[in-house]
Amino acid sequence: MNEDETVEIAKKALIDELTASKIYFKLSGKVKDPRLSRKLIKIAKMEEEHAKFWIEFLRKRKIDIRGLKENKVKMLIMTSLFRLIGLALTIKLLEIDENEAIETYTYLLEKAKLSENERERIRKILEDELVHEHEFDEEESRFKDFLNHIRDAVLGMNDGLVEVLSVSAGLAGAYGLPFPVAVGGGIVGLAGALSMGIGTYVSVKAQKQVRLGIVSRIMLASKYVAHVFKEKLVTIMLRKGFSKKTVETIVTDAINNKSLLGKIIAEEEYGLKEEFVENPMKSGLYTGMFYIVGAFVPLIPYFAMLPVIYAIPLSFLLATALLSFTGFIIAVSAEVKIKSKIIELVLTGLGSASLTYAIGRIASLLLGIEVS
Image (cartoon, rainbow, N blue to C red; front, side):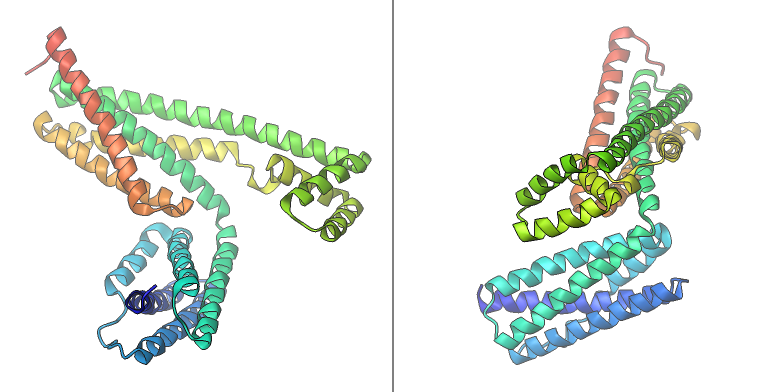
């Protein structure tokens, strides 16, 4: 890595740290929980210290930093999103930035020409960023159920949106009048919501029964045939790369605590955790209700009885906005790239609807059912 690239990375790091510090300070004044507020202030001060290091780093290289300030647009967006999506998802969004910072600082340590003091300071910053991540994990655990059901909600909403947008586009292409499109799309939306809600309930309930059955069976067996699980546990730990001495310690503790032994086997061999089993009723309700929300949005122009020539593009426009929002929520909760997820959902959703509209137009021409 040449010096110019190092300087550009440092400039970006300075702006990011200044921005993050301001965001955390602002959020600390908006949350009602005093404990959480103190935690956010603590992180804000850490980011402030990181910014001071990058100022020193750039000044040492004779770089003018007068134009390097916090990103006020990003600050406004983040504080606005806090009001819109709540603390849980805002923290997830900030965590994405923390992950990018960790990658950047690791890259600098591996590639850049740095003094020993600079390396040590960057290692400390990297350590702080990892601590931030841990702080976020603890906070997110309080919203784990909420985040899990947000995924049910947005997936249900996405399915309802894409299906009804496709159906309404096809009906608009075939009939050319808003009323039959609104009625037909509404019927499909309600039927789909019932189908999705019940289907999710049955699926999650069956999955829960299977998982809890396996966990219960392992827990029961571990009380009476612990030696069988002992051999399995040794094999699992050695395969993971633990030393024999460490494995002996783990196995000894597990054998003395049959409940712990069962939990380790359930998690390591079957990937099962009791605390991560979803509630079937909640999953079904969230999926069904938000399916209706997604289904209703593309039908708004048709229920408003707008001429089809205006209703179709407006329906697609509303769908694009909701698909973008859905993609954003999925990306944040799953910690994937926001832009790519939004593009993926918009292209697949609108592509499906456009194809269905084309089929509807062909059907109207072939069958002679167009109304003008």
